[in-house]
Image (cartoon, rainbow, N blue to C red; front, side):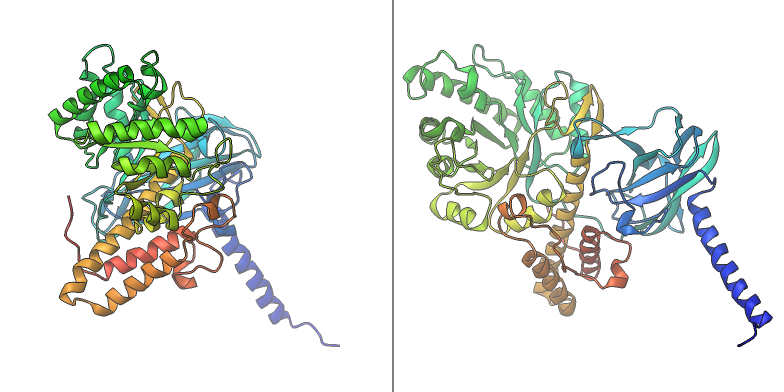
Length: 543
C-alpha cells in the first residue's frame, strides 16, 4: 500500500484551492453582495420567471455588436437570495479607445405584465423598490449606438444597487461595427389609430421610425369626408408622416370603413347611390393626398372572405368600380381568402393578404396564400403587387422570412396593431399620450427589421463589387452565405405556423463553433452577415 506524499497532497490541495478561488472570482463578478445574482438571458425566449441563462451558461457579461445608429438589446435576470431594501438598476457610460456612448443612450427597463406572453411590456424604472428573497425579476437593457459612434470596443455596465450600494453588475461589452445599415426598400408598418393629439402623433411616428418601420397604416378614428368635404385630418397626418422621415407609400386603411359602416344607408354596393357617394369620398381623399406629394395606397375592403361568397362578390364589384372610375388612385384591399384574392386582385394595384382560411362554407378548399407558388401565380395572372397583412409581428416574419418572400415579389407588410383603442388586446404598444411602452413582440419586430437591413446591405455591397471585379473571392463567399440562408428558409408560412418548423433549424450553422460561442442562433447568422459586409466595398446609398 502506497503512503501519501505530503507534497503531492499540498499540490492537490493547492489546485483545489485555486479552483475554488477562481470560482469565487467568477461568482463575485456576478454577486458583489452574496444575496444578488445577475445573468444574461435570451430575449427571444418566453420572458417569465422560469427563464434560463442564455445558452445554458450563467454569465453576467453581455457581448453585443451593432452598427452606428442601431438599437441592440440584451435581456437579463436579477435574483435575490435575501431581501434587498431598496433595489435599483442604473447604466454607466460605455467607453473605449474610440470614444464614449453616454448612459443616456442605454435604456434599462423591466418586463411587466400587460396582455401576456409576447404582449407583455417593457417599462422604464421609476423609484427604487424592495425585492423579496428568492425573487427573480426580468429586465432589458437596450443600447442605442449613436450615428456618429466610431468603430471599436466599448465597455460599461448596468449596476444593481441595494440600499444605495452596488450588490451586483451586468457587464456590457459592445463592438461598434465599421459600417452603417441600408434602409430596406420595402413598406413595413402597423395599423394605427388617430390619437387626436399632434404631440402624441409626432411621438408615435418617431417611435415607429426608431423601430425601423418604413410606413404606417392608419385605420381607426380618422375622419372620412362622407357628410362634409373636410380632409384636414388626413392632410395633417400626411405632413406628420413626411416630417417623421417615412419614405415608403402611406397605407391608408380607413376607406375600408366606407363599406363596413360609414356608407350604411346608401344601399347595396352595386347600387348607384352607394357608388356615387363612395367615388365622391375617395376623390376627396385623393385630392388631399396630391396636395402633399406623398404616395398613398388606399385600402377599400377588409377580409370579405368572412362574409362567404356574397362578401367576395361585394369585393369584386368594389374593386372593379375603382379600376374603372379611379385609375389615378393606387388601390388595395386587406384580404384573407384564396377566392377573394384571385377575384379582386385583377382590379387592384396592390394585393394585400394574409395566409388565408377556407371560409365558413369551405369554398377555398384549403388553399393557403403566403407561399412561393401562390405569390408567383398571382403575379403571373395579375399586375397587382403582393403585400402581406397580419402575417406575424415577431423577429422572423419581419426579417429573414420577409426577405425570402421579397425574392418572389412581395414589397410590403402591414401588421395589427400599434395602438388599438384604450390599449386593448392586440395592441403592440401601450400608449398614454406621448408615453410609449413597447411590448416584447414590438421590440423583436425591430430586431427582425434589423436582420432585413443586414441582408439588404450585403446584397447591395455584392451588387457594387461584382461589376468592377472587386474582391471576387469575397463576393463568392457572400453569395454562398446568402444562398445558405435562403435555402434554410421554407417557402411557405404554413410550415412555421402549423407544421412546427423553426428558423434557424436544427443543424443550420453559418459560422464555426468558436466564432459563434456565446451568440444565439439568430445572432450568429447576423454576425456572419456582418463579417461578409465588412469584406466588401461600400455600396452606394439609395434614397
